[in-house]
Image 1 (cartoon, rainbow, N blue to C red):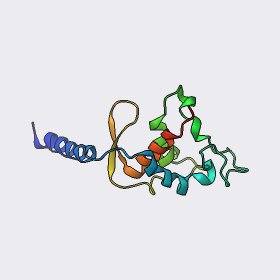
Image 2: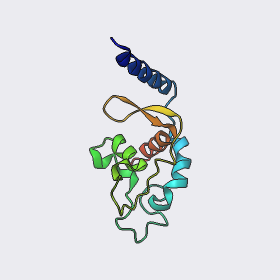
Image 3: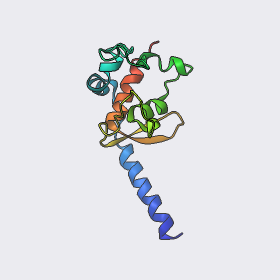
Length: 137
């Protein structure tokens, strides 16, 4: 094997190992981020009834039914993409702000539904954990 093949593999393993040492945040860690960044539109309980929601088109989503709308499985990858703004890149007129730049930091491993652990900024993972915790049963 050449150095060109080995070096990227070693660097990739080092990044993954550093990420794997951190634990997934608990929902309480994301509750504060939610209150600061999401409740204005989505409401204190996540039901789309925040003080800024009146008259918004489209109306903010009820975040407590994301799993129900996905066959009972919380759509982690979709939620992460929505929060960080990745899925809206280059699409003007989107009412949902892009929070990706606000939610940076050390990474933690997150299983986004495919069994592969994805390095995710801890604040973003914390918000994800909180949103998953408020799903209606």
